[in-house]
Image 1 (cartoon, rainbow, N blue to C red):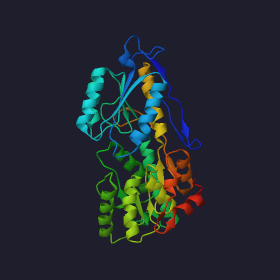
Image 2 (cartoon, rainbow, N blue to C red):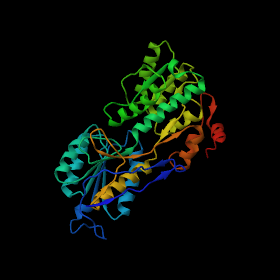
Image 3 (spheres, helix red, strand yellow):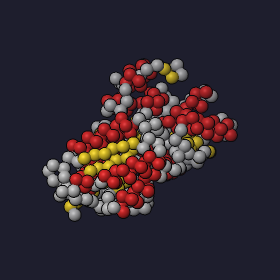
Image 4 (cartoon, one colour):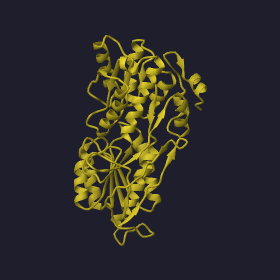
Length: 364
Protein backbone atom coordinates (compact mmCIF):
# COMPACT_ATOMS: atom_id res chain seq x y z
CA UNK A 1 0.00 0.00 0.00
CA UNK A 2 1.33 3.43 -0.93
CA UNK A 3 1.73 6.14 1.68
CA UNK A 4 1.12 9.85 1.19
CA UNK A 5 1.75 12.90 3.33
CA UNK A 6 -1.05 15.43 3.60
CA UNK A 7 -0.08 18.88 2.40
CA UNK A 8 0.57 21.70 4.84
CA UNK A 9 -2.11 24.38 4.65
CA UNK A 10 -2.17 27.93 5.94
CA UNK A 11 -4.70 30.69 6.50
CA UNK A 12 -4.79 34.18 7.98
CA UNK A 13 -1.19 35.06 7.16
CA UNK A 14 0.02 31.56 7.88
CA UNK A 15 -1.49 31.32 11.37
CA UNK A 16 -3.63 28.28 10.70
CA UNK A 17 -1.97 25.19 9.25
CA UNK A 18 -2.39 21.46 8.96
CA UNK A 19 0.18 19.65 11.09
CA UNK A 20 1.49 16.35 9.79
CA UNK A 21 3.40 13.37 11.20
CA UNK A 22 2.74 9.63 10.87
CA UNK A 23 -0.04 7.16 11.67
CA UNK A 24 -1.36 4.35 9.46
CA UNK A 25 -4.83 3.43 8.24
CA UNK A 26 -6.86 1.51 5.67
CA UNK A 27 -7.62 2.16 2.03
CA UNK A 28 -9.37 1.11 -1.16
CA UNK A 29 -8.46 0.43 -4.81
CA UNK A 30 -6.56 3.03 -6.83
CA UNK A 31 -8.62 4.98 -9.41
CA UNK A 32 -7.75 5.13 -13.08
CA UNK A 33 -7.55 8.42 -14.91
CA UNK A 34 -11.31 8.61 -15.47
CA UNK A 35 -12.21 8.16 -11.80
CA UNK A 36 -12.98 4.45 -12.03
CA UNK A 37 -11.09 2.00 -9.81
CA UNK A 38 -9.93 -1.09 -11.68
CA UNK A 39 -13.47 -1.68 -12.97
CA UNK A 40 -15.14 -1.09 -9.56
CA UNK A 41 -16.87 2.30 -9.78
CA UNK A 42 -18.14 2.10 -6.20
CA UNK A 43 -14.55 2.17 -4.92
CA UNK A 44 -14.15 5.68 -6.34
CA UNK A 45 -17.30 6.95 -4.63
CA UNK A 46 -17.12 9.11 -1.50
CA UNK A 47 -20.19 8.93 0.74
CA UNK A 48 -20.75 11.88 3.09
CA UNK A 49 -23.41 12.43 5.76
CA UNK A 50 -23.86 15.85 7.34
CA UNK A 51 -25.72 16.12 10.67
CA UNK A 52 -28.34 18.85 10.25
CA UNK A 53 -29.01 22.33 8.94
CA UNK A 54 -30.45 23.94 12.04
CA UNK A 55 -27.60 23.94 14.58
CA UNK A 56 -25.20 25.76 12.26
CA UNK A 57 -25.34 27.19 8.72
CA UNK A 58 -21.83 25.88 8.10
CA UNK A 59 -22.84 22.35 7.07
CA UNK A 60 -24.85 23.37 4.00
CA UNK A 61 -23.24 26.73 3.25
CA UNK A 62 -19.59 25.75 3.57
CA UNK A 63 -18.78 22.10 4.32
CA UNK A 64 -20.95 20.67 1.55
CA UNK A 65 -19.42 23.00 -1.03
CA UNK A 66 -15.80 22.50 -0.02
CA UNK A 67 -16.09 18.71 0.31
CA UNK A 68 -17.88 18.33 -3.02
CA UNK A 69 -15.53 20.62 -4.91
CA UNK A 70 -12.43 18.95 -3.50
CA UNK A 71 -13.48 15.37 -4.12
CA UNK A 72 -15.02 15.95 -7.53
CA UNK A 73 -12.01 18.00 -8.52
CA UNK A 74 -9.87 14.91 -7.86
CA UNK A 75 -12.07 12.84 -10.16
CA UNK A 76 -14.25 11.01 -7.64
CA UNK A 77 -18.01 10.57 -7.49
CA UNK A 78 -19.53 12.21 -4.40
CA UNK A 79 -22.79 11.53 -2.56
CA UNK A 80 -23.41 14.16 0.15
CA UNK A 81 -26.65 13.99 2.14
CA UNK A 82 -27.92 15.67 5.30
CA UNK A 83 -29.62 13.80 8.16
CA UNK A 84 -31.53 16.96 9.14
CA UNK A 85 -31.15 16.31 12.87
CA UNK A 86 -32.74 12.85 12.72
CA UNK A 87 -30.80 9.77 13.86
CA UNK A 88 -33.20 7.43 12.03
CA UNK A 89 -32.70 9.38 8.81
CA UNK A 90 -28.94 9.26 9.39
CA UNK A 91 -29.10 5.44 9.48
CA UNK A 92 -31.41 5.25 6.45
CA UNK A 93 -29.13 7.47 4.37
CA UNK A 94 -26.15 5.33 5.33
CA UNK A 95 -27.91 2.10 4.37
CA UNK A 96 -28.80 3.57 0.98
CA UNK A 97 -25.26 4.76 0.39
CA UNK A 98 -23.74 1.44 1.42
CA UNK A 99 -26.15 -0.42 -0.86
CA UNK A 100 -25.09 1.76 -3.79
CA UNK A 101 -21.43 1.35 -2.79
CA UNK A 102 -18.82 3.56 -1.15
CA UNK A 103 -15.05 3.68 -1.37
CA UNK A 104 -14.90 5.80 1.77
CA UNK A 105 -17.43 7.23 4.24
CA UNK A 106 -17.04 10.68 5.79
CA UNK A 107 -19.46 11.18 8.66
CA UNK A 108 -20.35 14.09 10.94
CA UNK A 109 -21.86 12.39 13.98
CA UNK A 110 -25.32 13.29 15.23
CA UNK A 111 -26.23 12.01 18.71
CA UNK A 112 -24.20 8.83 18.28
CA UNK A 113 -25.77 7.80 14.95
CA UNK A 114 -22.39 7.56 13.22
CA UNK A 115 -21.17 4.71 15.43
CA UNK A 116 -23.61 2.16 14.02
CA UNK A 117 -22.87 3.32 10.50
CA UNK A 118 -19.14 2.96 11.10
CA UNK A 119 -19.64 -0.62 12.29
CA UNK A 120 -21.50 -1.51 9.09
CA UNK A 121 -18.99 0.26 6.86
CA UNK A 122 -15.87 -1.24 8.40
CA UNK A 123 -17.56 -4.65 8.28
CA UNK A 124 -17.63 -4.19 4.51
CA UNK A 125 -14.00 -3.06 4.41
CA UNK A 126 -14.88 0.60 3.83
CA UNK A 127 -12.69 3.13 5.68
CA UNK A 128 -14.53 5.70 7.81
CA UNK A 129 -13.51 9.29 8.50
CA UNK A 130 -14.99 11.05 11.55
CA UNK A 131 -15.33 14.65 10.43
CA UNK A 132 -15.39 17.48 12.99
CA UNK A 133 -16.86 15.27 15.76
CA UNK A 134 -15.19 12.11 17.10
CA UNK A 135 -17.01 8.81 17.46
CA UNK A 136 -16.07 5.20 18.19
CA UNK A 137 -15.24 3.00 15.23
CA UNK A 138 -13.78 5.62 12.88
CA UNK A 139 -10.47 4.94 11.12
CA UNK A 140 -9.48 8.61 11.08
CA UNK A 141 -10.60 11.77 12.84
CA UNK A 142 -10.31 15.13 11.05
CA UNK A 143 -11.06 18.27 13.03
CA UNK A 144 -9.44 21.31 14.49
CA UNK A 145 -7.00 20.81 17.36
CA UNK A 146 -9.73 20.88 19.96
CA UNK A 147 -7.47 20.83 23.01
CA UNK A 148 -5.65 23.81 21.51
CA UNK A 149 -9.04 25.50 21.02
CA UNK A 150 -9.54 25.13 24.76
CA UNK A 151 -6.06 26.42 25.55
CA UNK A 152 -6.73 29.54 23.48
CA UNK A 153 -10.00 30.02 25.33
CA UNK A 154 -8.24 29.66 28.67
CA UNK A 155 -5.64 32.20 27.59
CA UNK A 156 -8.48 34.52 26.55
CA UNK A 157 -9.80 34.49 30.11
CA UNK A 158 -6.32 35.18 31.48
CA UNK A 159 -5.84 38.05 29.03
CA UNK A 160 -9.15 39.58 30.05
CA UNK A 161 -8.33 39.29 33.74
CA UNK A 162 -4.97 40.95 33.17
CA UNK A 163 -6.63 43.83 31.35
CA UNK A 164 -9.03 44.24 34.27
CA UNK A 165 -6.18 44.07 36.81
CA UNK A 166 -7.51 40.93 38.51
CA UNK A 167 -5.11 38.24 39.72
CA UNK A 168 -6.11 34.76 38.46
CA UNK A 169 -5.94 33.26 41.96
CA UNK A 170 -8.41 35.89 43.22
CA UNK A 171 -10.73 35.81 40.21
CA UNK A 172 -14.36 34.71 40.32
CA UNK A 173 -14.48 32.58 37.15
CA UNK A 174 -17.43 30.53 35.86
CA UNK A 175 -17.08 27.53 33.53
CA UNK A 176 -19.84 27.39 30.88
CA UNK A 177 -18.92 24.32 28.85
CA UNK A 178 -20.46 22.50 25.89
CA UNK A 179 -22.80 19.53 25.78
CA UNK A 180 -20.96 16.57 27.36
CA UNK A 181 -22.46 14.20 24.76
CA UNK A 182 -20.31 15.98 22.15
CA UNK A 183 -16.89 14.34 22.15
CA UNK A 184 -15.23 17.67 21.38
CA UNK A 185 -16.64 19.36 24.49
CA UNK A 186 -14.31 17.47 26.84
CA UNK A 187 -11.28 18.46 24.74
CA UNK A 188 -12.28 22.13 24.82
CA UNK A 189 -12.74 21.87 28.59
CA UNK A 190 -9.46 20.07 29.20
CA UNK A 191 -7.45 22.57 27.18
CA UNK A 192 -9.05 25.56 28.88
CA UNK A 193 -8.66 24.11 32.38
CA UNK A 194 -5.03 23.23 31.69
CA UNK A 195 -4.20 26.89 31.05
CA UNK A 196 -6.50 28.53 33.59
CA UNK A 197 -5.78 26.31 36.56
CA UNK A 198 -2.03 26.43 35.91
CA UNK A 199 -2.37 30.18 36.42
CA UNK A 200 -4.25 29.72 39.69
CA UNK A 201 -7.89 29.89 38.63
CA UNK A 202 -10.48 27.78 40.42
CA UNK A 203 -14.03 27.64 39.07
CA UNK A 204 -16.64 29.12 41.38
CA UNK A 205 -19.39 27.33 39.43
CA UNK A 206 -19.64 24.87 36.54
CA UNK A 207 -23.23 24.18 35.42
CA UNK A 208 -23.95 21.21 33.16
CA UNK A 209 -22.68 22.03 29.69
CA UNK A 210 -24.98 22.87 26.77
CA UNK A 211 -24.78 24.11 23.20
CA UNK A 212 -27.67 26.52 23.60
CA UNK A 213 -27.52 30.27 24.16
CA UNK A 214 -30.82 30.53 26.02
CA UNK A 215 -29.99 27.65 28.36
CA UNK A 216 -26.51 29.02 28.89
CA UNK A 217 -28.07 32.36 29.81
CA UNK A 218 -30.37 30.72 32.37
CA UNK A 219 -27.63 28.52 33.82
CA UNK A 220 -25.23 31.42 34.18
CA UNK A 221 -27.80 33.73 35.74
CA UNK A 222 -28.65 31.12 38.36
CA UNK A 223 -24.98 30.44 39.12
CA UNK A 224 -24.20 34.17 39.28
CA UNK A 225 -27.06 34.77 41.71
CA UNK A 226 -25.78 31.95 43.91
CA UNK A 227 -22.37 33.69 43.91
CA UNK A 228 -23.91 37.00 45.08
CA UNK A 229 -23.48 38.55 41.63
CA UNK A 230 -19.68 38.40 41.75
CA UNK A 231 -17.89 37.57 38.48
CA UNK A 232 -14.54 38.43 36.93
CA UNK A 233 -14.38 35.94 34.08
CA UNK A 234 -16.35 33.32 32.17
CA UNK A 235 -14.93 30.43 30.20
CA UNK A 236 -17.64 30.04 27.54
CA UNK A 237 -17.04 27.11 25.21
CA UNK A 238 -18.46 28.84 22.14
CA UNK A 239 -19.85 32.17 20.98
CA UNK A 240 -23.46 31.04 21.35
CA UNK A 241 -22.93 30.21 25.02
CA UNK A 242 -20.96 33.42 25.42
CA UNK A 243 -23.80 35.48 23.98
CA UNK A 244 -26.18 34.00 26.56
CA UNK A 245 -23.74 34.92 29.32
CA UNK A 246 -23.26 38.41 27.91
CA UNK A 247 -27.01 39.07 27.94
CA UNK A 248 -26.95 38.49 31.70
CA UNK A 249 -23.93 40.76 32.13
CA UNK A 250 -25.67 43.49 30.13
CA UNK A 251 -28.90 43.14 32.09
CA UNK A 252 -26.99 43.55 35.35
CA UNK A 253 -24.66 46.28 34.10
CA UNK A 254 -21.54 44.18 34.71
CA UNK A 255 -18.69 45.38 32.49
CA UNK A 256 -15.02 44.44 32.17
CA UNK A 257 -15.68 40.71 32.56
CA UNK A 258 -13.31 38.37 30.68
CA UNK A 259 -15.37 36.15 28.34
CA UNK A 260 -14.07 33.54 25.90
CA UNK A 261 -15.78 31.96 22.90
CA UNK A 262 -15.38 29.90 19.76
CA UNK A 263 -16.58 29.90 16.12
CA UNK A 264 -16.22 33.60 15.22
CA UNK A 265 -19.95 33.75 14.56
CA UNK A 266 -21.78 37.01 13.89
CA UNK A 267 -22.79 37.79 17.47
CA UNK A 268 -19.37 36.77 18.75
CA UNK A 269 -17.62 39.20 16.41
CA UNK A 270 -20.03 42.00 17.31
CA UNK A 271 -19.59 41.33 21.03
CA UNK A 272 -15.82 41.41 20.61
CA UNK A 273 -15.82 44.72 18.76
CA UNK A 274 -17.99 46.34 21.43
CA UNK A 275 -15.92 44.95 24.31
CA UNK A 276 -18.40 42.48 25.79
CA UNK A 277 -16.41 39.43 24.71
CA UNK A 278 -12.65 39.27 25.05
CA UNK A 279 -11.90 37.05 22.05
CA UNK A 280 -13.11 34.04 20.07
CA UNK A 281 -11.40 31.02 18.54
CA UNK A 282 -11.77 31.08 14.76
CA UNK A 283 -11.89 27.77 12.89
CA UNK A 284 -11.96 28.35 9.11
CA UNK A 285 -14.22 25.62 7.72
CA UNK A 286 -12.33 25.58 4.42
CA UNK A 287 -9.15 24.35 6.14
CA UNK A 288 -10.96 21.54 7.92
CA UNK A 289 -12.78 20.47 4.77
CA UNK A 290 -9.57 20.52 2.73
CA UNK A 291 -7.85 18.35 5.32
CA UNK A 292 -10.72 15.85 5.21
CA UNK A 293 -10.68 15.83 1.42
CA UNK A 294 -6.98 14.98 1.42
CA UNK A 295 -7.53 12.08 3.80
CA UNK A 296 -10.46 10.81 1.71
CA UNK A 297 -8.50 11.08 -1.54
CA UNK A 298 -5.57 9.20 -0.02
CA UNK A 299 -7.87 6.39 1.09
CA UNK A 300 -9.68 6.28 -2.25
CA UNK A 301 -6.27 6.04 -3.94
CA UNK A 302 -5.31 3.12 -1.74
CA UNK A 303 -2.80 5.21 0.21
CA UNK A 304 -2.27 5.57 3.95
CA UNK A 305 -2.75 9.13 5.20
CA UNK A 306 -0.44 10.58 7.81
CA UNK A 307 -1.80 12.09 11.02
CA UNK A 308 -0.06 14.31 13.54
CA UNK A 309 -1.96 13.19 16.65
CA UNK A 310 -4.19 10.44 17.96
CA UNK A 311 -7.24 10.30 20.18
CA UNK A 312 -7.19 8.49 23.53
CA UNK A 313 -8.53 5.35 21.84
CA UNK A 314 -5.67 5.44 19.31
CA UNK A 315 -7.64 6.80 16.35
CA UNK A 316 -5.31 8.80 14.05
CA UNK A 317 -6.22 12.48 14.41
CA UNK A 318 -5.54 15.08 11.72
CA UNK A 319 -5.65 18.30 13.74
CA UNK A 320 -5.99 21.68 12.04
CA UNK A 321 -4.67 24.69 13.95
CA UNK A 322 -7.27 27.24 15.15
CA UNK A 323 -6.78 31.01 15.34
CA UNK A 324 -7.43 33.43 18.22
CA UNK A 325 -9.45 36.48 17.16
CA UNK A 326 -9.71 39.67 19.20
CA UNK A 327 -10.94 43.09 18.00
CA UNK A 328 -7.91 43.62 15.76
CA UNK A 329 -8.44 40.29 13.95
CA UNK A 330 -12.16 40.62 13.20
CA UNK A 331 -11.23 42.17 9.87
CA UNK A 332 -9.36 38.96 8.94
CA UNK A 333 -12.49 36.84 9.42
CA UNK A 334 -14.43 39.23 7.19
CA UNK A 335 -11.64 39.28 4.59
CA UNK A 336 -11.66 35.47 4.51
CA UNK A 337 -15.34 35.54 3.55
CA UNK A 338 -16.57 33.91 6.76
CA UNK A 339 -18.46 37.00 7.94
CA UNK A 340 -20.17 39.96 6.27
CA UNK A 341 -19.01 43.47 7.10
CA UNK A 342 -22.54 44.73 6.45
CA UNK A 343 -23.88 42.44 9.17
CA UNK A 344 -21.00 42.82 11.61
CA UNK A 345 -21.01 46.60 11.41
CA UNK A 346 -24.77 47.20 11.55
CA UNK A 347 -26.56 48.88 14.46
CA UNK A 348 -25.29 49.17 18.01
CA UNK A 349 -24.89 47.18 21.23
CA UNK A 350 -25.63 48.87 24.54
CA UNK A 351 -25.23 52.29 22.94
CA UNK A 352 -21.96 51.47 21.17
CA UNK A 353 -22.01 51.95 17.40
CA UNK A 354 -20.77 48.94 15.45
CA UNK A 355 -20.00 51.19 12.48
CA UNK A 356 -17.65 53.25 14.64
CA UNK A 357 -15.95 50.13 16.00
CA UNK A 358 -15.55 48.66 12.52
CA UNK A 359 -13.92 51.90 11.38
CA UNK A 360 -11.63 51.81 14.44
CA UNK A 361 -10.49 48.23 13.75
CA UNK A 362 -10.43 48.34 9.95
CA UNK A 363 -13.40 46.07 9.27
CA UNK A 364 -14.72 46.69 5.76
